Image (tube, rainbow, N blue to C red; front, side, top):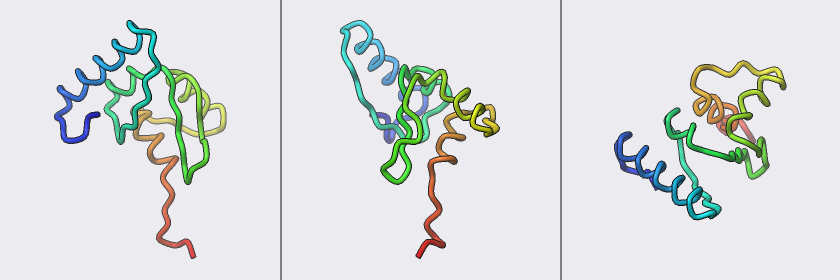
Length: 94
């Protein structure tokens, strides 16, 4: 829902989507590529996929702890870390 929007507008769109979900008791599913930290912090649940397989599914605010407990060092921007850890470099795959 945020493709092509500036960061200010993207945040307010996602805040509106979150409010609609919470106020209306609805489940809302969005796909978002490289969310800002502000937008990421609006998420209740998080599903991370890599090559069609689930890497993480659970509360968004617990994802960092999950990866730290698995031995990873998560930097200050969890959204960037999650993108890095789920991206597969296929340049050298036969």
